[in-house]
Image (cartoon, rainbow, N blue to C red; front, side, top):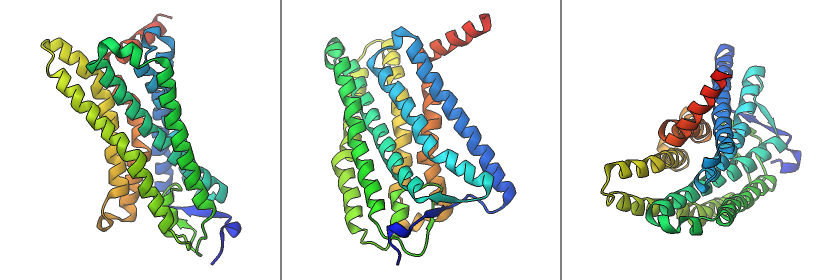
Length: 309
């Protein structure tokens, strides 16, 4: 058994050993990566340039786009480089960095989605008190709390990797480093780490999900009481993009981390990782562009101005 001081790197799992398929994987991931970057940068640019979008809802949306850019940039570029070069190695420090960033950014995304649900709850259920409750000071504190809490969680996960001993196997059965896969090849006692992960989910993640569910129960209850069909449509139009994004993030994560062991296999685990690490950053700007009228109008205006110029 070798300890962590002698670990120089790990071997990530590729999508194929066939050179042609490796190049195809590079092209597909590069296309996804560029689309995600363009989509999220457009969202950021639109909100910054249009003053009527300088509201708490779009403040959280901009932060979500910044997170998505970082989240997808942690995993895809390394995987693309490995496929292009035919080399699946990742350095020890690079692996620890991936663990820290994936945990920190993914958790912060859940925190921001929770804050966005609360924002919609206040806007629809208590509109007269909206500006008082959702002040900029409150928004900054909510975003900062999400970032701080999950940065600490990321540090703990990275520290667990740094203090773990690893067996002779260096093969991580995933296309990026993540704690559950590293635990499989660890020779250390992994039970405390597993208990910590369950405790964090119970104390931090589960209440976030519960708060979102409760918020939408109140939101739908209020919306269905609105007499005007146009009023109901307007209320739903501000909620459905967020609810769709949250559902996508939640269900892909649940499928990835809580699926029965009987369903676990290398191909399925790779697919699950793509669902929660790649799909949300790609789909979030698309969903908001298609389902949010204000974003659509701002996009149309921006492209029309470009054509006129």
